[in-house]
Every structure is written in structure tokens, then in C-alpha cells.
Image 1 (cartoon, rainbow, N blue to C red):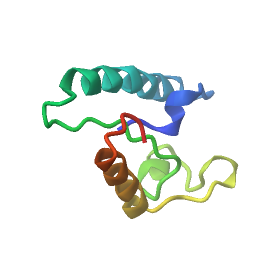
Image 2: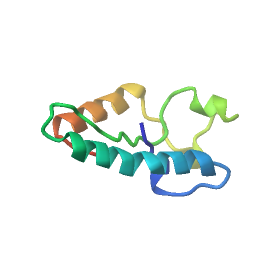
Image 3: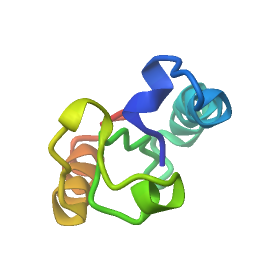
Length: 89
């Protein structure tokens, strides 16, 4: 599980963004190594999603008033990505 945070640094979330940024090239390498083996690999990069994440970081709001995606929509996007043999969705 990656995140849109993988594509940009964010103040006060440096470690989170850096760990998500690591996930992208790691996933791309795993995807390439497993191509044609029947193993599906995908870096799912959702934006703000309706989970307990915001409660954990001490707020109930997404940055900039973003609309939260439902977990169901995020999962559906992941399945679409896998079905298309995408490496990043």
C-alpha cells in the first residue's frame, strides 16, 4: 500500500511520505521480477480515504478539505489496476 504521499514531501509527515516513496520503486522492481509468473504486484496510491488514519494523527479532516474516498472505491481501483497488469494505480 503506497499513497499519493509517495509523490511529494509533506511537512510534519516526513517519515510517512518517505516510507511511501520507498514503496513505489520497491513495488516496481517486484512487479518486473514477477512478470509472467502469475504473481500480481501493484502499488496502490490512494488519496485521502475514509479510515481511522485521521483519528490516529489527531484530526478528523483531510488536508485542504479534501473529499475522502470510500474504502470500497479504493479497493475497486486496486482490482482494476491488477486486472490491467498495472504497476501503480
